[in-house]
Length: 310
Image (cartoon, rainbow, N blue to C red):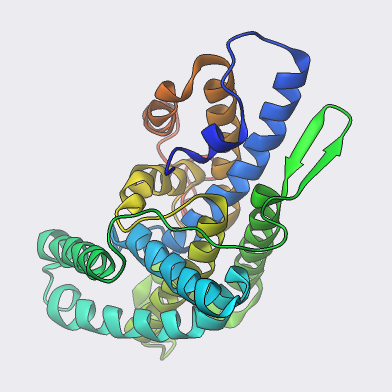
């Protein structure tokens, strides 16, 4: 319980075979979609707004526990609850950013004290969850969770496939929103040139407030997907802090499509390494890839939004 999701889905075998390779690739793609769901909100707050929200995984765990409560008590599908609660998380994000802006960003103290603010939020959420649910692992029930489709030698577990589908919908939707709508372009402009926004009569703080709200709203849906993939307990979010930040940096700060590509690559590499070399190597994958990309292409795979450098 609580192991890396791959150890629940793949038998760890050292003997190479074509069947293992194909299944490792399929699981890697599904895992990449799952990682994209966890990271897509951070690509907004950290990538576009330069807010180092290290509490992002804690908000995901909060969303996961909300879905667990409604699923265990009322039998409501966790993904449905994640969607229903996303407006609540959006409002929560608005309130958090206004506090952060007034107390830290507005006074130029966001570098260290702002980071401590999100550290504090992370531990507050974790303590509240521990006091409410204890430290035991919790699971949800849904008809598709234990279903597995088999195509020849390839097994597709719906525990991973359903989150993959919703992760893709969320990533594509956010990419369309940020590139095709006025507010989405304003979000990108905040990262590029806040002064230009002011000259157009647009308050950058208001744009940042709504953008941060959107980033937190994604945590509700990501939490629903997380609790479907693995059992949860209050501190499990710490396992993903390094991965989500690595994915956002690898993809290019502020790029939703880059985040998706980076998540897919990380999922594939982790799946292959876990399958053929064992799970003990997988924690080093994200940071090893991050070091290589920062060394050879510091702007990430697709480059930072608004950065014209190669």
